[in-house]
Image 1 (cartoon, rainbow, N blue to C red):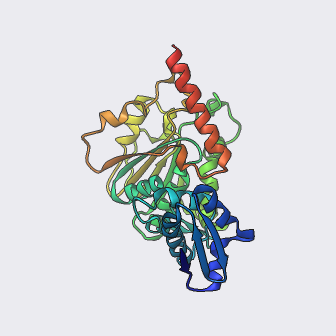
Image 2 (cartoon, helix red, strand yellow; image 1 turned 90 degrees about the horizontal axis):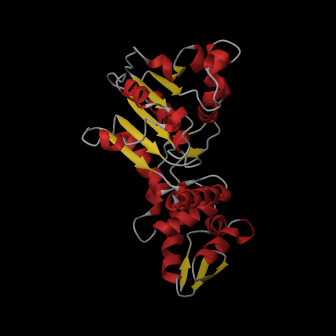
Image 3 (tube, rainbow, N blue to C red; image 1 turned 180 degrees about the vertical axis):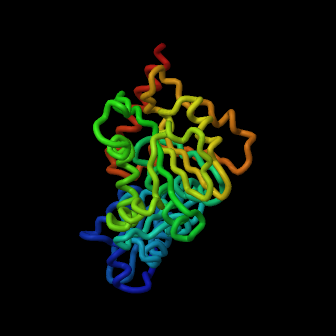
Length: 313
C-alpha cells in the first residue's frame, strides 16, 4: 500500500528524528513503513489502520502541533472510534512561549469540554493526567476572553500533616508550598512577569480552603485542587460558595487521601450530586498520564497492588 504526503517537509516531520515516529508506529502495529521523500509504503496486516493513523497525524502536523510517541500511541488507540485530529488539535490556550495547550487523550478532551459546558466540573484521576494543568489553561483563557473577572486558586493544606499556623511567614508564605503546582502551571501559561501583575491587581487570588467560609464567589473561575483532602463538611461549604457567572473545577485523586481518618469529601460525591444539572464528573485513568511513561507504569502497579490487598482481606 502506498500513500503520498503533501510535501517533503511534512513527511520529514511525520518521520521524526532518525525516523523515531515511524518506528513508534511499527512497534504498535503489525506494519512495516518505508518513507522515501513524500511517498510512504505500508506493508503488513495492519497497513489500513496505519494509513488511517498516519492521515490523522498529518492533520495534526498541519495544524501546527508537533507529534511525539505519546500522541502517536493515543492516535492509534482512538483511530477506529473517532477522528483523533479533532481531539488533539483542540487548542485550549497558547502559552507565553507560544506553546499550544491541547488535550492529549480522549478523556482529557472530555474534561476540557465539560469545563466549557458546565458550571462545575470534577476531574478525578491519578497524578500526571493533566487535571490541574488543563484547569489552569481553561481559567486563563476564560479570564483573557473576559468571561470572568478573576481566578481563585484554593487547596486544602494538609499534605505534610502540618497546620498553616505552624508554618513561618505571612498568609501568602504559608499557602505557597501547597499551591506551588498551580503557581507553576499559571507561570507556564502567562509568564512570570504577567503572573506577578495578576497578583498585584488581585486578578488572581490564592487562599486556603478554610478561608472560603462565608464568601460568595461571583464572576470568577475557581479551581479547588487536591480535593480528596477535603472533609465532607469542607466540600459542602466550598460548593455552596458559588455565585453568579462563575465556573468551578474541582480536581482530586481518590487514591491519595491524606486527611486524618481518611474520610474524604470526594468519596460518594458523584452519588450525592447525581441529580444536579450543570455539573459533571470526568474520570481520568493511567492511560491519560502525560508525564514520563514510567509514571503510567507506577500508577498501574499501585492500582494492581491496592486491588490485590483489598481482595486478600
